[in-house]
Image (cartoon, rainbow, N blue to C red; front, side):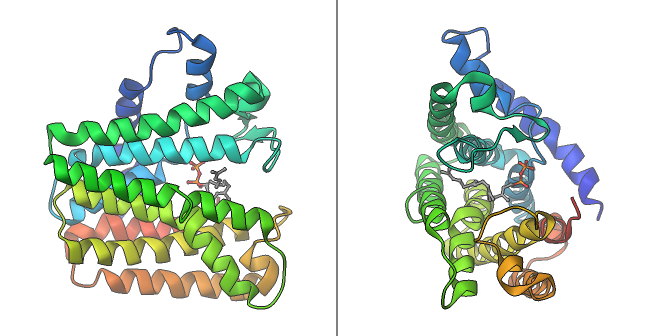
Length: 280
Ligand code: GRG
């Protein structure tokens, strides 16, 4: 399957939904709304939205049913990148070839734009009740809140910032990756599947798939970024070859999880391979 063609086909759907979700940059407070849009458009690969929609398709549903999940997860992803770039975190001046939000709009605007993107994510997921039962939407909101909170993304970031080499470095790094990166990828898949009507057993299976893919994705990302000075990097601690083998091992475990799903899960499998084996 051609993943790039799949992403190219799904991305306009996501972009249109994101555009509809965001207040126009002309709406007051203009500086806030412009800052919220800066990193969101034109955006990145939109991998997490694609995972959400592919999960719905794997269950035989139309991708559109997962769109509120796709949008919500991309909004959380974008907020986390804006905050990660801040001077008190990674202090980055460029992302995706453009100035970071705090460089363009100032530090307080970047903090507040991230905050507003995060709350908008939950508003969008709550809005999915037009198509799904309210209790399903509520559970999807819970899934995403857990993934984004202190036991997920934020807790993973805290441990990443405090990371120091020592015993069990590889296990510690994988635990950080599972929360900082994989929790949100798993949440995209699980919330997409939840809106598509998945039962608990299916959701647990997809959660395991998402975490394995997400940890492998982060190892692959660190392999591409080897010159970065983040100590919490699998290739830095174990070497490139061991890291590449570990990413492949996790990918295999993830794909094995999906063995009872048929042809309809092919986009989900292909996205997983793409996320882990990409070269850029
Ligand atoms: C500051 C709350 C807070 C969290 C920060 C997201 C994050 C946690 C840190 C950002 C840097 C980082 C290494 C994140 C891990 C996930 C990752 C590899 C993000 C990049 O994801 P892609 O490749 O990005 O999907 P695009 O640009 O395509 O959207």
